[in-house]
Length: 135
Image 1 (tube, rainbow, N blue to C red):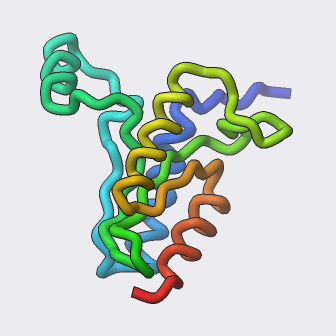
Image 2: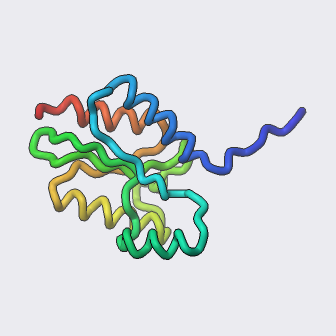
């Protein structure tokens, strides 16, 4: 049996699938992915990125659509099987995940609907649930 090549950037593939979904199902919706997440950069690009984007833990997807008192939707996306939570639903002890959770909390304080989402189906469910709220 031949080994299948392992996808080294599963989140990037998930972004592509979600981008296709959003384009087809919600063509007038304004949204943006954090393209730099997981992108290989030169040292100069890294320095410029840090200067222009000083906050760590920025969410992967932002949807610019107000709904029921929310200013928009921000989602931190995780690949299937890579939940930020332990089995008891407690956040995993990981510096990067904790930074992301803190950023989601900050967005929530600012009036945005903010969530972690794992895998395509959960991402779509959160997006669709949010978009079904009354404007």
